[in-house]
Image (cartoon, rainbow, N blue to C red; front, top):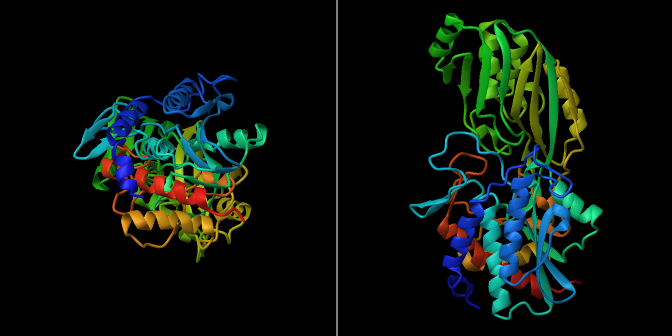
Length: 447
């Protein structure tokens, strides 16, 4: 079967469907959430949009209490599950184009969600549609579950499986990470951290919007201090003066790779600490800039999942209390509670944390992984080995599921960044790979 030729007839329709989907804002909204719209009106609009598209393409639809949209096609006891998400992270930073005004330039499509996760989702959707139209879904179903809360902890899939008691897949994948395939994911947990500290001249500090992205902007309301401004300028720290204070400027990246970003929160704390001689602030700003934890005895490395990482995503300060979030990602050797306690002891802080998202590891030689790798390798002629990641995906919440694309090694990740994009050639090739993989998974012996 020539899967490239199979998908070619859908190429233009796929692009138009993606553009329409990207134009639907889908950021969580506390203000508009209801029982029927648990993640707010915008996410609900996106879930309904993909439901209408799925229905148009011949899928049966279940709205899943507003938590997710379930699209099913084909017949048979065996079920191939595909888990993707419609929600996106906030649109922080400076964008060349409107984040929900998709634009194609030089072969790339730009918009929030283009690579995380609307582009890969549309690729998988049309791959499934193409197989069905060709009569190749024989003896098995394909179910695409589109969640609305992946970026905030996956309450959507938790509700889907635990409250609704939905069927788990025989084999499954989530198109929300890297090719060739992810067989292991780090554990993830947030520390909500507090510290009592007086900062001269400063009324308030506020920065960041999500814990799982490097804080790219921090607004400081403070009295005018010419000497502090001089200090910042001489230290070559990026800032903008405002009428009521100043703004520190950084660079946002995904929380799984914090060393690739520039953390405005840490720059802010170190600058204030160094200038006003507040050792606690200087220590946080300095030591947490080592995102692995080596500088404060918070480091661990394993053969499978590699280094621990720490990402400060949100920061606030008012009336002598500093609060900030730390997105901690850890390997299979780590006890998260012990590392949280060690963190507080070193920084003299008080932290709390929720239930950690546990480490996930599959055998890279299991038949499910081998089938997907086979599809990838036959379509790309790339024989790279499967990977592990610091990112967390739906694979942790769905049984018999691994992360599979759609980011290729030759493309720099723009997830959670301004001007997020996906190359159209990658978008199309992902659909080819997914079509081939779905077919191979459907043909696998269940025993």
